[in-house]
Amino acid sequence: MISSVYIHIPFCKSICSYCDFCKVIYNKEWAVSYLKMLKNEIDDRYMGEKIRTIYIGGGTPSALSLKEIEFLLLLTNKFDKTMLEEFTFECNIEDINEELMLLLKKYNVNRISIGIESFDSNNLLLMKRKVDYNECKSKIEMMRRLGFNNINIDLIYALPDEKIQVVRDDIKKILSLNPEHISTYSLIIEDNTYLGYKKTKSIPEDLDLEMYDYICKRLSKAGYNHYEVSNFAKEGYESKHNLVYWNNNEYYGFGCGASGYTSGVRYDNTRSLSEYLKGNIKSVENLISRENEMEYEVMLGLRKTNGINVREFYNKFNVNIQDVFPVKPLLRSEELIYKDGQLFINPQYLYVMNEILVKLV
Ligand code: SF4
Image (cartoon, rainbow, N blue to C red; front, side, top):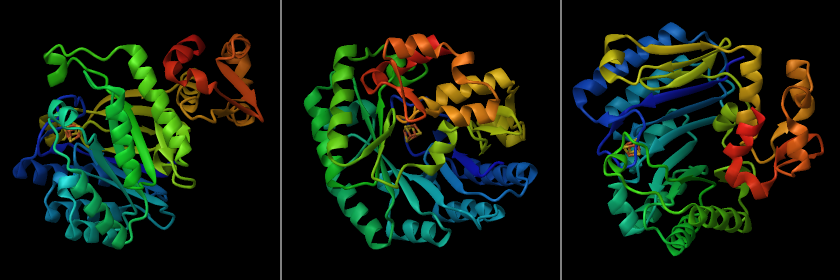
């Protein structure tokens, strides 16, 4: 049963040098047409399920005008929200103000995800982003006053020429803002980005590992649960929406560039805004076979630090996980651990999770 919705807003006020998401520079005319098309897509595809989590991401949803944001939030009233537990809205810090926060509150948004990424001036210059620590601090204080008690902050590390001390300073500043959730991303330089076009080199792998190791230890020491390879949360604040993905459950994806998983079909909407505005919304649909579904279950489930419940896997697929995937050699090499009914990646090897998944699937 589907109980989650992702909505993609592809507009940004400026384009970051590392970004390969589906996005364009904000344009009023396009934004208005886009929201109308989004309404059509939701009206056509939503089947009336009770929705437990909604995530509005991008792009930068907060790049829209207040009037456009209200139109967008009104669209979410189409969903049956009687069981709603988590409603996330992504914001860039410069867009946050009291008026926006009150509007989000009015429509039941209870989680704000802020793309801070770094406080370091060299990193910000390289990423083509603007962030000011004091502005973040005062805006988060204002959000707290208005009752937002579930805030995520994104951090990007492993930028070219970045030193470990920069990561330490960024983490220290993020911790001083006391967010409930922290998402971290090691920078991957994709070809179709400004950094890729400039042939920018990644940092050495051993330094990347040192940074990852530092982040994991420092955030655990500060009381955050390292519950997914790149995500950390205070107890009870693990992202319910993102757990839907990692638990391989179905969800709607609406909007240009959005992906979804409904009725056994994984689909990707077109990444072309002009096609989307013409109503040519879906570009790829894949019917998921039982084998595919088991592979997704393993690849997504092992991203969580508590991994996969072996009994639940059996109940879902009527087969033992070790009879389908080469689990035993990886248990012998201690890359995987089996404990209390859970199969998970040895924390020492989380950094090379992808290599382990390749051996498994
Ligand atoms: S990283 Fe976020 S804000 Fe920057 S261009 Fe990409 S979607 Fe927009």
